[in-house]
Length: 160
Image (tube, rainbow, N blue to C red):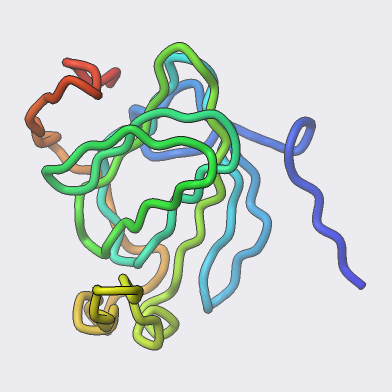
């Protein structure tokens, strides 16, 4: 039996350049993908960035906000956000903390997943969205973050 520890006492500063107030801990990492825990303090932010891998951002405690491409949404514990490959993504908090598990699939693994399947929604193959020649560590910071439209449920300005 293997037990991997994460959480308080095991975290370190995580995230792309421009990220602040976010600590994390890798739980698993190999050629198939990565699983990590991220802890956002109040007024923390993971800066906008892209990644070639299909990623799930699973909120397990608290809540905050996310950006996926030109969309933004409020998220809370019990919700998972799908971050498609090569699409700008970001996350932040305001007055409350948030903890999330980040599950990132390598391109070969993502090709076998079927996204969005459920009542009234056809399944979409993830493989078509992922370039086969990009590895799990490829990606980069977006040089100029997009400015998604504001709505009444999300703040008027991003914290980065």
